[in-house]
Image 1 (cartoon, helix red, strand yellow):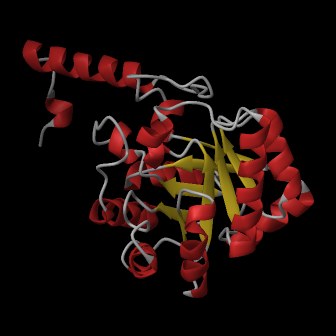
Image 2: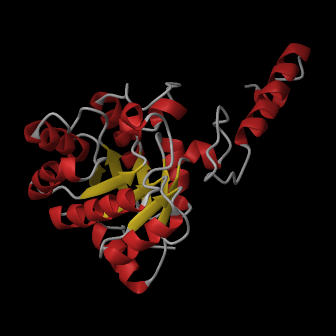
Length: 267
């Protein structure tokens, strides 16, 4: 388990050394503290909070103010992992000034060490501009949730050879533009392997098979807290929803019966 603060250079060296990278999302102080203590290399404050925390149908309603707020909570808790803020819909698409200003908010107000943004060839100028401002950028290709309407739903991407070649070209272009890592989401494993072997920066997979340099999952999915739907690529490592229900039902029962509180819980 790492004892020093993870940096973008730590991650790049891990790829060179053939060491896997473990990443998870978090959105608040308690879970971020747990994720950090567990030894995560990356804690991503994902705009997925729109779905698993706010109860929205997509990530599109999430605002910059909300992302900065949650990133600050996470940053207070994390001492070792690299904290990355996920740039929400329309925080970088409208132009370079917006992109740099909003990326700067993640660092200045949210205390993140890096930002992530979705897209390939269409966001190269934003990646370059943010990087020139001294802010590390993580890319995101494949199933990009902010483009859900354009994709026609949450579907596996780049299945055809032509689409795969385009994604590979986007990955290389993102590397050239200055990203330090690339998330590959919802693409065939064989394509993820091609991309991983073709770029010098780490690839972080989510629904992209075992050949990526690292993996990321949504915290609420892997802990069994979010049960509205479960993608094929999710493995549940706990069932905290059921454990929480059990505890709360027992608490309610003891309150109604007078069993709680006892003298032990009184002053």
